[in-house]
Image (cartoon, rainbow, N blue to C red; front, side, top):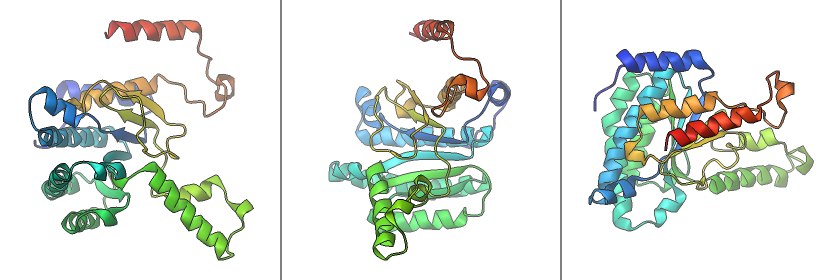
Length: 277
């Protein structure tokens, strides 16, 4: 699939989103449903993973065109290592091929590549290709594409706690000096703002050990679309939903200078949800 330049209706849709409200600075996506997509079509699971790459490409392009600054994709979790070895091997080959095939296109699009997770556990050839792609794109100023590889939220918190505990053990830090910002600084996402919007595909309602600390105040959109079916129009729908929400961060509407939501707001939203069924 070649690079898609927004034209016609798609460009107008993007302009409407940008004019309509805040575009999330950071979007995180739990990409789920590849296996079910393939099973429904009588295809092997790897076919779903292959088609999922096309979804990644389209979503990355759309986010870059919209001015999204960070896009984090839950690519391979620490729990995924428990899958059958044949599937793991196919996923690693697919990741290696995607890194090789997409690097130049991403670089030309000014995308910066980052990885979070325990990448030391990746096969050598995959890790080397990943590190090289990150090196090539490290000076780019556009969308920061963050691949969560061999990642889990509990792993992230555990390694942060170990680092902070080591500072305490060495006498460089007192326990009562530990702050939330200090914890954030020791996470794999240090220097990256927390996600504004978390999207999960495939109709599941769980966060699957993903960015547990970072999504404390993220808005969540759960969609029934399986990941191989998920395209830019679904990103637009999620952002539209995001723009309708009031982000209070523990405060009340009056403190934010916005009108409180009345029962009418919720009735209107209910009718719109029913109309989509």
